Image 1 (cartoon, rainbow, N blue to C red):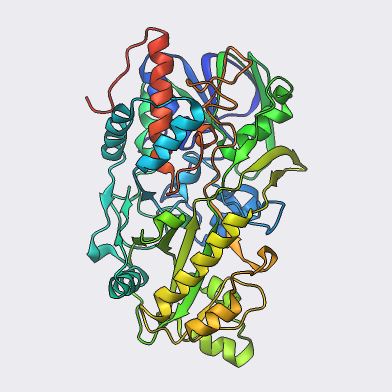
Image 2 (image 1 turned 180 degrees about the vertical axis):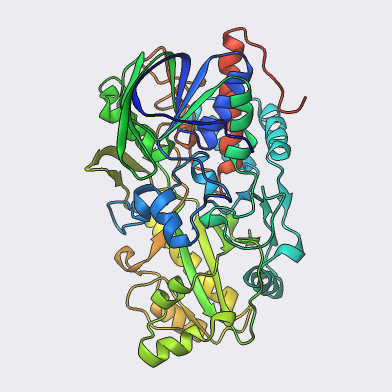
Length: 499
């Protein structure tokens, strides 16, 4: 792929019709749609371009280079929860597991209730989503590409009679290396930097990397320029008729608030959902290791309880932390690497958090789980344990609970994870921040920031609520619709996704 982005230095001044801050799922989709409609578009991305040629070689290097706050971005609340996010051309689509779900119908109905009908034409929404599905080259993970953990997950759910299926993923060139979270090393993932940004550039969009935005007004964006060594090498001032903020559900409200725009709109940063995930690790009797997809199998058995089980990547470091094994026992545990299995219970959270102004570069995320979500997490722990102990005859499992011992039966699980288990003992994580600058709350139906005439939000933060599934397809669909509305209101012809 030829270079379609620019790495600048020195004092720069740019002028454009539309500036888009962020190049992830929302920003890239908006950039392609608007530039192809004839607008002069500039995209600003604080990270850099990565592909198989210059990708970090290890997960540790990737986290230090391509994850927000070096992977340490965490909520403040009970319990503290890490919130992963990508940094680079393509945003989190670079380092996600490429998981794709259609927006559940009850989710879309809920969005319409909360936003007073922002997506009232549900048939049109799903027609657009079908186009996005095809555009992103989403396909069901075939059995031949399931990892050993995926296959064990599938066998266990089938044994238990649970609703299950192979995950759909936007990985048309998947080689089964299982390193999606460390950026695809063979360009097998159709992440948004490959699907949309080259089209935007071909249509005339200017895409600048290493551009860190510090301040935005209604007509101007200012910041500084970094090189890949994180050294400041310049500054920029950009004048635009329209600003589109697409810095993600943490970055977007943070930037708007830091620039003082919450004085006119106090709903900025309110309503954050994060889809907390709780893991269960297992040692199964027979070796299961084989290369395959990063995450290729799921169970929807407990959807009515707001719990989705997904096979997880097998990371030795996570196992070593989960099982209280030291010295020789730790060495013996690592020798069981081919027997390791893992599942994650994703919770469609009811809890709403908030995002504030960053402090010394660290995001301010306030989020304390409510009682209903505490119960959902405990159910996720119980069902993850049942999956491995009863579905796969695991020798032992480790629970995501501080101070717990390995369990070898469901009786031990219920004792270690009682229904009154306190939040402070639970170990969770998240990678799906959403809905912190919502349509129907902070934005109108077109994504325009209420109180302003020319500032829009087009990313995961603009969703009216959470998805309840891995959200990237829902984000692509929503932002394509918002960008098309922007074009239609200005008399611009929209170029179809397929010509």
